[in-house]
Image (cartoon, rainbow, N blue to C red; front, side):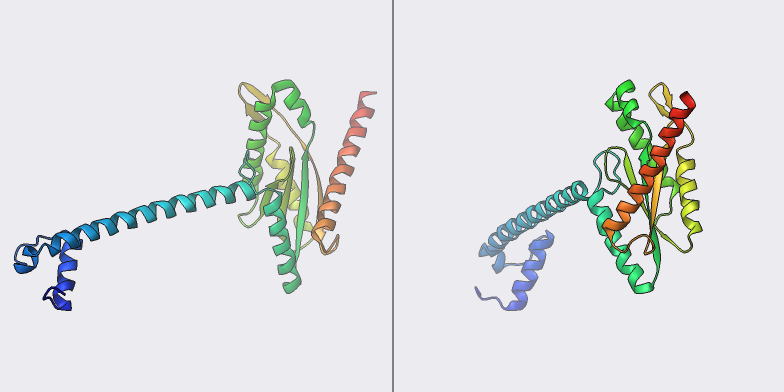
Length: 231
């Protein structure tokens, strides 16, 4: 093209793209081809930068949507949707390996009184701190999810039935120390129920129902004991 072979065009493109001086191109430069090609390449660079910017924004938006869809907005813990995905994956792994795992259902005792006496902002801060403590007490491979106002579920692989007691003790101990909410120190407790796969169920719904039932049984027993103590 314009009296240049492919090698000359390639060298011209390289020099214009890199921003190098065009001194010495002689007739090529005099034809104004370098200027035209430079403008085209500058436009291409601009389009590439714009496409990269749009791609970064799209990825950030997708990450934000994924965060909202799978994680609790207050605590940052997995929500019910992500928990259900991980339970399904745990069931599939256990079926293949003839293994076992446990679900522990945790419900805070008297949390409504915190909101009533100290306000919802204090309640939110308490939930945030509880989530942090519970998460710190577990292994990295375990899942701690917030599935409701003051309800949390732990998913953990186990080898022996005694492992469940160890995890229950860890969760209870994590809540033992008072929580500082502003200038107030709050002490909270929780009722826990658990279910083991496959002994207590071989489906997600059955396991969650069993753990939930165990939690409410303990909560009612504590309430009845407290009522007897007050007599």
